Length: 226
Image (cartoon, rainbow, N blue to C red; front, side):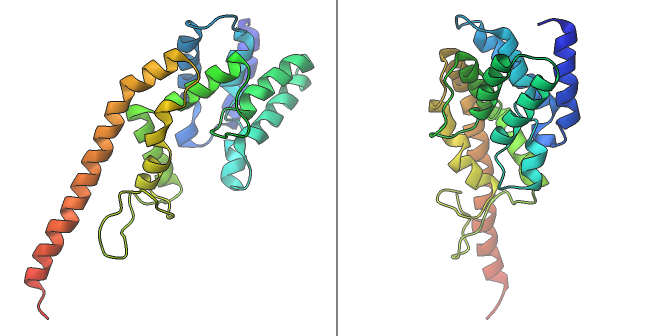
């Protein structure tokens, strides 16, 4: 890929990115993670990989405005149209489309090509470890969702089995379980290096909040009279 082509694709990506949890820096991290993973794999089409990384989240705005949309499917269509409109071959555009369509967690639409598997893994690495915690908290703030939920008995929910969205619920539903879902060996290694930071943060914040509730209620009950 020459610089002119790279900047054409990059500039289109920059026009599409507005979500601060899925901003242009997320795109660059995914791209750089992909290149690190690709060093340990064979027969990589770097043109397909780089293009797919740059364009994988270009429909985040559409999904944010209409949550019923899947940004991966919508983005794949946008990318295909952009590429064919700008003189790229249909076969090339189809390969990029596949990578973008399959970069989400969905058991019914797994990545097949090595470029798609690398994109999937690189994107998931940006949800792992400390950066994953930070990005999740930013996103929860954007959509006005809380850090945690309180159960009917007044105790703080760990997030497990919660139906109400919160940071704790997202951690238990997604962040805690992603470390066994990588396709490439290198991505799995990087994820394991990051895992402890996420576990420690969740345990610390849960213990701090839970302790406040338990101790605070005991003290309040001593003061408030029947």
